[in-house]
Length: 530
Image (cartoon, rainbow, N blue to C red; front, top):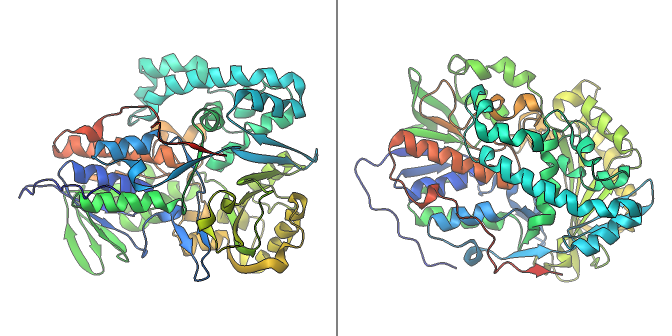
């Protein structure tokens, strides 16, 4: 581990900044602001850091990621650590996963092992459609160019509709094709629907359908093939815990089990917040709490005319997830680290999710981390994580979905479907089990409508149409997190934290430093695990 970092020299005039929420965005903001000399206090309602990226450890010794189970595009978080004088590689062990994942196509009873090796990947694509194999390298080249032209847009605030007229965005339009969808864009390279599905199911990371998601997001699968999928030894929360250590070393204070009740204002300027009945005066607040859940309670409606209660309530939200965390006797070396089962009626499944109907033949994702990381379970056991996309609470209520009634039958359905992956009879080997439904996401983890992927990422809720990093109408209030520009997903949330902290530094006159720079490039020390 790194030696403790030196905290910035104390100044009587150091700006006081409160960060609400110790999720990935809040922790990144705390690090960056503390490194620039601010007096940072982070308030977290739970007893651990990490938010939805925490790791759960059971008394029996099983370790489960709560939400994200892998790390994508580590460049951004590496740069954040380097900018404050730390090294990510000294704090956690990242292991590159190969194959990236196994895709099982239920309708075709076929599977492929996705890999970043072009020769091997072309052979895998050829299993489904020999003609489509030649489309892989052009797809990678085109999306490399797409990311290069759009990355500057994702790295800056987007506070005005006039940003659409900026030359860098206008130059990107021919590649981004905003009128198209992910599936239609992929059809330019791949004719077979299952091959397109192999490169588009990643839109589920945004809680969206590939048949509706803007074509920009073909870069999601590109990032996996270009920069790899990474496992964090001991679970995803290792990075959040490392950020908390570094932030504390830089002088930030982290107060766990300290929920924020509301903010206080002088006119349109935030002046402080109330936590555990005590008022804390501040010069600025960075809110990392779930936007839909927290904003109505923390900020008076009169101060947020663009995001009043009605707009927040009627906004479009992602799907939710049904989760099973299973401690199982036995190891499963024949299972891939990541397995995605795509249902026979995938398009029908998507339509059900979009309209609020609980899928009757759901697609699912299975995480088997002990295949490369034995620390995730006791010797001879496995920690299996099962995720199934389901409607969020608001959409599900339209069709009478009641998780207090429907959860047991849905659990039975998804466990039975694991038999198609060779896990028949799994239930008799379960030694630990925890189930989360959309109700739990809302009530235990304060996720609005249980929509685990936040606000939907359609064109009407992106860029200037998404809640902004410098929250409009309230002086001194800033946002980070998946519900904020530029969007959800860990790398994007970290990038959003950099945007937000640059704005805070600009407004409060914090000293400029490396925290605002970007170096680029992957560290060579990150080696693949095969």
